[in-house]
Image (cartoon, rainbow, N blue to C red; front, side, top):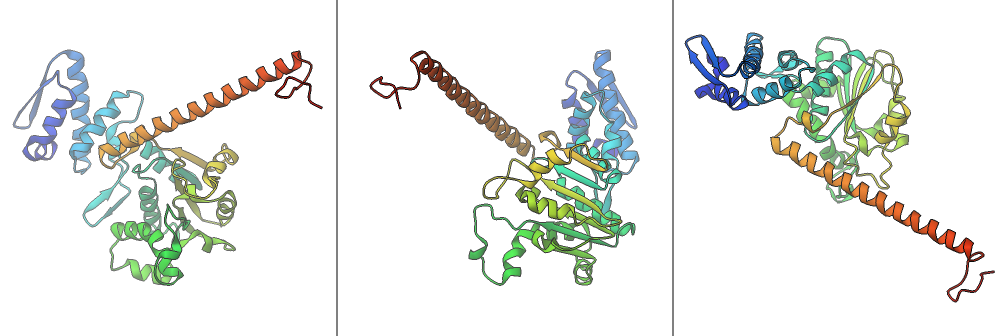
Length: 341
């Protein structure tokens, strides 16, 4: 009961705020819900799911109550205890697990397919969950090594201005991958695994010409690959190897904007043993404001696309009108109305 209610009954207050028409009273080990029958039934479902989570050893926090309430609002979706109760990896006193139905579908797809594409906005856990599954596979001896890669593409800055050798220049672009590995594993073990080649973190350019067997490979920031680089990467697939490709097609930094990730969604869609998991702002697990920022930018991009489409239609309409007018006048004419040669 103490774990269910949370410190200073914070979780209890979250349940009350999720169901404001229900009065919640706790006495000893009993919870009494009072209100209209439909409201009480909905509140009880939430409480039952929170009890199921605590029974599985999950430390329920306030964000879990909010996510559980949103999941239960969709009666056709999975139960919160099924989503939040699935542990992928436990390390250094914390457990990594999916936190939304979209993340649960993404994690399940990694278990069931050889190549999985995780596509979605920032904060949806695409790379983090993929790396957790990679480390899980290594610990279970399902693979012999982990390969983490990403294209070294600048987001406004230039590699040449960074000090040091080529390795020093590339390191900042791979730093997020190093940080995630150190967070999920004992930092004292990670350097030994990297030195032995069990964990390899390298730029995408280093993948050319290799055949990668018995590996778990994660390609991050895939929206910044060219179509040729994406083809090169996917054809590195060897026996006993699994690939996860993550990216956000709304944040393309490559010159020209022709993204290999955007292209591959059209080329490989429907191919057996390849899955495309599309995450949305509903799957953002960072600060709640991140989800609203993503939605605002999505709406802005949609408005700009609609405006460009309207301008193109208006331009085409004007051209058609000019052609019809020209045909009635007997062909194209110059600015004085005389027929053009």
